Image (cartoon, rainbow, N blue to C red; front, top):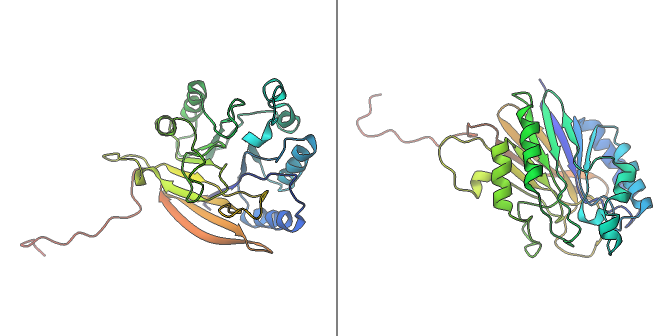
Length: 282
């Protein structure tokens, strides 16, 4: 059976510039990789206008693949009172759900809305949303990959250290792990980062691996700002591992620049060969 593939794009920031070559090559990449699902993890627009939402939606739907789309902090009005009274009005013109769920025999994805209108940049997830994830994953097929997508990042990126991670990220990570999440993806910081939770969280015994990923931005709203990468992630998943393929825009095409592999399930990718003790029988 071929590996399960999921493509993640984030931070499109539609409305900043017209780039038909970027969009055209993205369609080619999707056609070649044939992902089961394309996940768009927020900031579809730069200034939350109707035209920008329509443009972002047109690009995503032109990929000719199933979509799971969630909002980011740029996808709501910038100023009150509309920020609080018409928070997701423009987003809803194109996407009916703030927290969509995708289900198949091989893949179950929960989209979470981490946008909070009283936070300009930061995000949060409520306990009721985590309970929703738990219920969805409890009904998932036993061998299906359990994936969570939200906009605000849990995993810090190398350069954007002043951009805070999502509120109560340790509690959030623990709740998502306990719910069964194997892959958690986000965006927000326009930089790539990927890690397995045991690289930063002390756990003991035989525990299931959870891969945490922050995506670079697909759009480039501030082209002169150093420390904002431009790229996307393609995930390849089999029974034993989650492979994270990172692509960056190379001026005329999307080029693969990184290949990371993380364990899925309780078994490690490998073990270190131990020297034989003195006196051991050959």
